[in-house]
Length: 262
Figure 1 (spheres, one colour):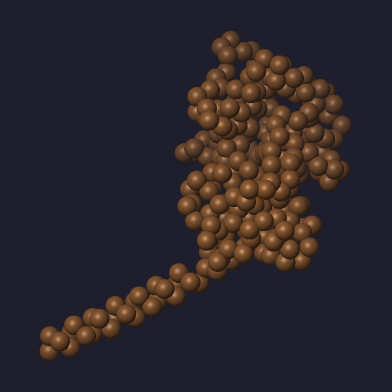
Figure 2 (tube, one colour):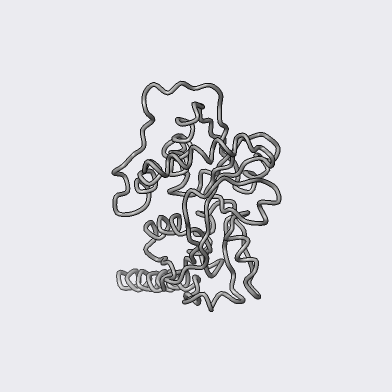
């Protein structure tokens, strides 16, 4: 009787092992090792981003669009897509959190981030460009960037100066799903773009108000006047310039490709 029970347990263990092996093998091996391998592949992107625009130009590729970059990364881990095309800094965050993912060495595309404003709103654009120039000249912007990107991350947090007189509000449309530029820390939206926007408001004497929304709604919010500016790691592109104006660039970014490491 005891031998029968042992045999039954061994048989169950063999079946369980086979099932687990089957589950593990359900995620296909990585097939993207360079940018040349992207043709005909399933590319995951965040809806409405420049990654979405660039992926659409890859010959024979199937573009899978997600509301969040994190959702695209999860689909990659599950084997539903072959790679994710996304900005370098968020990519580094996702790879740090997932040991089974890596970033291809070759960058896909360089791009310039800028602030979106309603077409024809030259008064606000001039004020923002002037304030940006001041933040660049005195090193404030460099300190904000360094606090989120690079070896000194976390060492130079931005703090508003005391005694700022504020009159009016600057409403910022963003998508808080893009670390380190904008993301949630508890119930608060923080990040490089948020600190930069706050620094701009400190120079302009305005109170910053942040409206979180889907990324593909940011431009529309600026167009319709629901927001004064769109600050969401937005790349200044000719396509977007048909709908909004842009400030001078405040940082350079890189589009990269995330793949499975095995």
